Image (cartoon, rainbow, N blue to C red; front, side, top):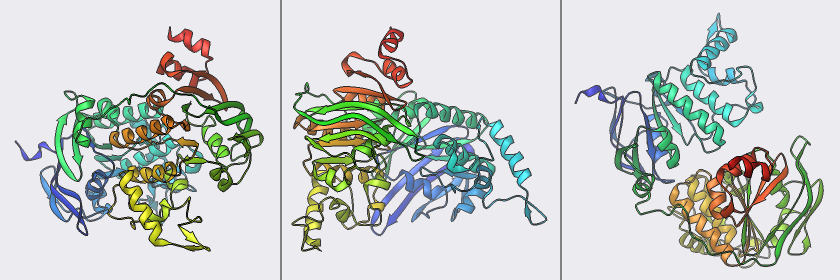
Length: 513
């Protein structure tokens, strides 16, 4: 075996955070010209390992070799110099800048002390044409789609001359079409001689894109396997340490009384244009109603209107016989509504506050959490420990800041807080976005359990298999209107896809036949 068989070798990498080992003697070997997946649960140590490779963190022990030569990577600048670039999960772009300005930031070409924008735009145009990354160099970042922003991030690393690209959960916020395009881009980069490390926990993606896969569990490297000869079930089992049920069995729905009635609902988006255009639907106790649709067809505005986060332009929202149209958030919550928002960091948690404070956000003003306006921290911590235990939230302690938890555990904390209140109506939006198969299975079980207890569950998800597996009925939103209602046992993903694209139920059923 020659030294240079691997473009990247990470040997026995350990990262210790004050007694907690995020990485414990991890090995990773990446061959030139391959897409190498790094698979693991939320909080398994994948991002820590890649932050070490990209110079954001220094390892406690272990060594890194590039093309067989030992290297010291003590800063992102050192990583850039060695040809390592990272495309982060949360994009590192300045909204007010153009795509070009973001790409050249810190690496500006200049002539006589003045930034040479012309030269930069020309270089970026050549790069984007070469790799099929169609991006408008002069567009402001705030005006372009998430998929375009991601392309800008990729161009940023290529512009700095990266030969080893790290993609951290690149598809968490992309539509199925954008995911296809991204995988195509990755394959063209590899064909050009680049090497890619793909951090993910989506098994379908790995099967679709990766050549080899290294599995990390609880900070240790478990195994590296060829993707072609391994099944999704085997990968999932390696990742979580036990067999995983992809489809959770559920009893037939016992439909109860109507809990939520929506009539003629119209909601505007932020610019004042209609986003929800006069829709009617009902959710009963004992059922899960799924809302399917491509992102941007009014789902976000609908959920925000139902939960009091956005004004209703016309129509009514009635919960448990009470009209709560345009009522304040707290009043809606106290009517018996639990809400797991789509953006957990923006609407679900206060990241600077501790986990115990976050778990008390819906109850802090009530006894026993407070008395005469004074908070009882002892009671809050006691309650938090109970929820951490019951809902399997992985944390060092209840006082840890919410922002320091992994994405999966942040989501579990929100689910724990909302479900523990015993609400009659549970509104969940993208409940498993960015989660691993173990956490997904857990949250799915919780939602089915709520349904079986006679609760009404309204589920919004862009994951079609999630909608199909969990829902008792499905309504499809297209362009702010209901394109049709179907039942999961009598429909297919293809038919749903056509409805989402704007076909009628009859036309979609016909086309599938």
